[in-house]
Length: 135
Image (cartoon, rainbow, N blue to C red; front, side):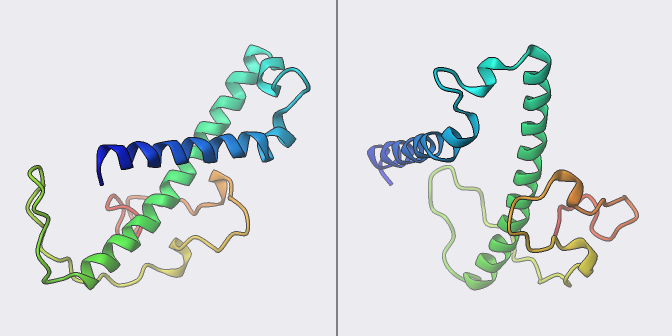
């Protein structure tokens, strides 16, 4: 990918964000000549921001989990292929043998909408795999 192609991908992402602002965002946050956040008190804005950060953490954990599954599938599918030859590439790690599936209680249920952070099962240091990320 060239720098120009990367810049175009970034522009595409900005256009997608703009479409969300003018679509679902307009329905949820448009208050005529102002946005909902402009009408919030400082306390409401701080509370709202904290909730958004908590949602972001939950989304990132879910994304990390899916990326871990994708990485395992890619590692398995490309075992034995040439490694990355980019000038800043790190040596490839040896393939990790497939791990046993986690107990059913650890897997997140299939949601039709984003869950709250409280829907995820809590893990403790006594749980298998604690500290190695969700698997």
